Image (tube, rainbow, N blue to C red; front, side):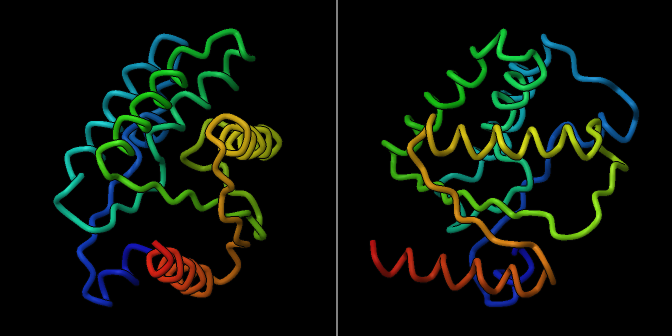
Length: 165
């Protein structure tokens, strides 16, 4: 997605998942880390608000709250609440979020992740549920098949969404 936008000359930046290095270094996320992770990821993203037309991320900040709920089995939701409020504040200041849910149609690779495939599917379901029921946003669902096909499909959807606003 990012490279396709760059190739087209768009004003775009990539924001990587802050805690991915934790996974690769075998550092676990405990129940106290989620607020910190929300702060780091939202800081990386919001730094670019108003500076580029598009921000592409593989781990939007709201995921910190979703992972907290999943991994504490619903015991805690304060990070998700903070993420929602942050998102609402950004939207009230002209930021538009477009949530795209890529479904895996290829074998799951657990390297660099904490979850096995079954746990990852549970996270996928929690993401969809939060977007639909928690934010009232229907995610754009695309099978991830050949990556270039998914990127082109997303670009077409993005262009159509921008034309309609």
